[in-house]
Image (cartoon, rainbow, N blue to C red; front, top):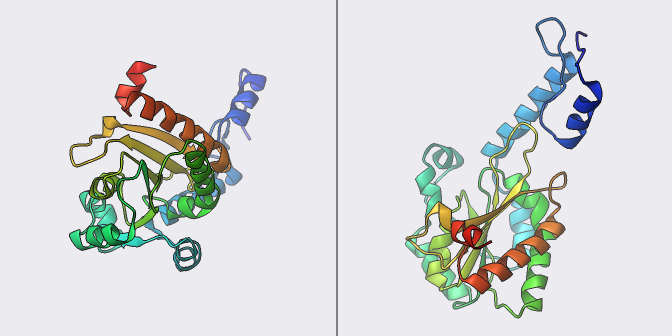
Length: 244
């Protein structure tokens, strides 16, 4: 294998500090067999994440046992969701009306759980993240509504739900778009005073929530601290960054 870096120790440090493909080396003009096979494996995982949906086991066990309402976006299938992103940003009027009957309104915080582009991220991280968030909310005496699960959803669907339930703040826990180093990463999009006029810059984001990034429990504690700042300043997103 032809691989003679000029600064071996520095390269080794870089390789231990990131999951990115650095220091792969080559055999002639091609990558080593091990690197190629790993790439194909990671590509398959990313593909499965984008095309996968929340499992029947998750929906019937975790979500059902927690009593979480499950609704769908306007996207009618996974293909429809991927090809037409705006459909994932809204849900039906009938779904909203059903949530109004089930979920407490006028709460400080509303949690929305979205499969996004990695349902696997939700299934692997939510069980540890959700209790940590609820514990933090209780310690701060913040009221919170019943978390809502949305299938084939994108970030903005949380704004519609939170506005309908008149929540002060919404957190959308959503599966991130997978890369070739991680297919199970979750993000938390936090929005103060969400509604139809909300834009991307209004949101504060905590990303890379997964076992090899920021563990779910640690992320939960960090999210609670962020929410404390958001409530204090009554703003999220770029507006919050400008104050710090």
